[in-house]
Length: 317
Image (tube, rainbow, N blue to C red; front, side, top):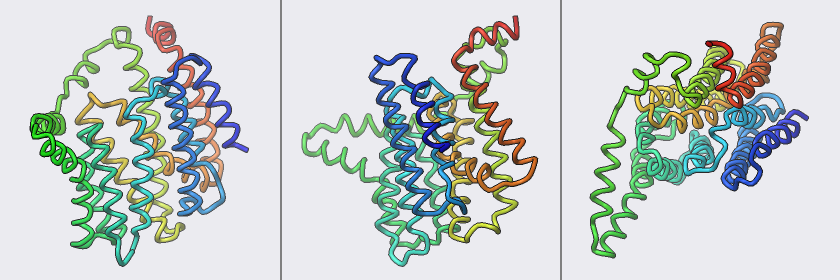
């Protein structure tokens, strides 16, 4: 009953603050769609050894607790894109002909890079995982992955040839490369020198939310590494891919903080199966204690994100 309760309560908290905002409804729909996608992924690939909907529950509840991620934007489409990419990557595991799977997975990566160009830096990491964990990287599948990755650019090039206007292509490629390689650490310097009362409420929300997500992710990854022998080899490889991706997303957050809310959204989407794996499959008093502390922490995070300015002034004034 946990998933239906989470969906109902989360939906009320999502929509009620501003029920007339269509962007909220759009973000809610994408969130529900992604939660359902994790439900199907868990059922088909058996990411958890027990029958559980904790992956979808973890994703939706965590996302509900961060209201600045509720409105629909192009970045809202990245979690379902990540989910579909995983669906293709995981089904390529030890396939004799993985080319179509890798083509579609890296096509989604190419489309996502049009929204956030820095996503392209996940390419070496995912290729490494395809080679080491999924055993699906061959010269032919590598070629298929490269074709899928470059297909959006090829589409723009064909449009430029058809209209005989290469401005979009040249300016787009230049802007893409500049954005993907421009590292600006000014945000972290600003956070470092700011005082608690001068730091804007939305930055407080980001820092606290990101800290909670990463803390739970670290606990989950550590536990999964210690008890991975209990999972099937196939599922173990899938979890390793998500472990590496979570680390890559954290590195991108540190290097490109101007896209911090997008990285937080992807960290929540990618970390949900890892955190759910820990909550579902651990036993003992310590695991129960961490679960209840995590649940209370999510409630406190929700209250903090809705009343940030008042709570910060109350604590630090």
